[in-house]
Length: 118
Image (cartoon, rainbow, N blue to C red):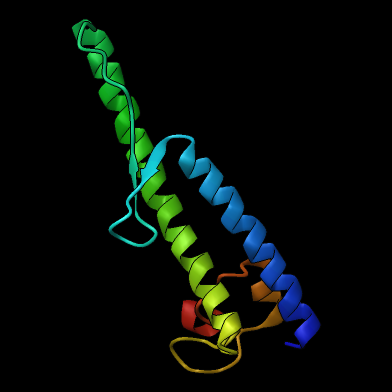
């Protein structure tokens, strides 16, 4: 992948990082002790009845699931950005071959080539 394409991928990754961070900030608090770790937050109303409390628990569980998925994506984006800085971007973590350009265009944070991803 040439420098221009890598710079384009970097810009895409930076935009995705910002989007993920903003979305996480809307319902979770960043854990300052662990890098790229977030904790879903929901305000529980002590005066809620049982049905409302059940709804709050269901909402919290959905947020935790969403938060975990977004954390993984954010970690992968940050790792891809680190690889760009270290001139290791686009190299498969399993076979050390070059990841296909079309794969990186679809998934800029890809860690593996198409063959190793199967």
